[in-house]
Length: 294
Image (cartoon, rainbow, N blue to C red; front, side):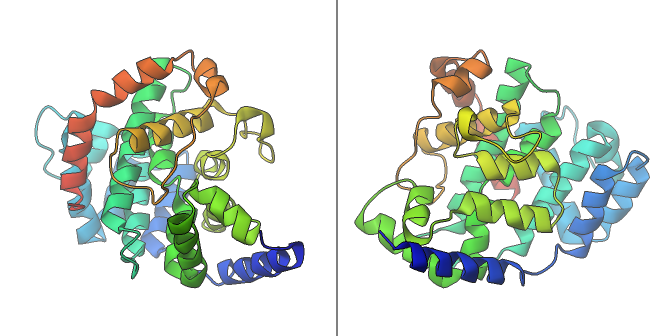
């Protein structure tokens, strides 16, 4: 294990690098403002999305996928916002615009298409678990939190590549959960790094909290007034389901069981969660195809 002095040095290096990450793209930043606004109209969000034709195209594609259960084809962003609502479309547009900011990795051991497929599965599983368990009505925010829960991992790959490659080397030699390998090497992991990136980009608080705590059990979460929100348990379970059902790849060779407390907090059994997830494989395939991930 790396010694304390080395860990401090590694952490400081990572912190310094994070301070120089690119700012959130203009359209993403405007969408973040839209999410926080109580006065944003359907035409406001439509105008912002339409400024980026590629984003608008992906938005229409995924909204028309099975994942959103649209009965008739949505032809325009304005129609999509009217159908799904300002908040839902704002969250979806924000997530897709952030995905677009990250380029492919140079290391074949971490496949971006498989990574985002995993993330889409977590988002869809999380939204449905939240709906079924009725512990939260913030389905749009939970979808965003699921899609971006591993933001720190993709940021490490993109902007701290030497550190990321060392983690890949480590788990190749000694398989363990990704975050544990990071802690062992650097004394910090992608959940904390993702939190810093998300806070720097002023992403929605529930997304920040889910990113920060998605590898932690309820009794050790602290730092935010939402640290023990049930959304974190939902994301933990959805993450576990995506890995155990072999949908995409998070890059981690080992996944930990969420633990009995997370299931109890949702009044859900592992068997029930597994059954919910298996019903959604078609929706995930449709969403992945609409995003051009395969």
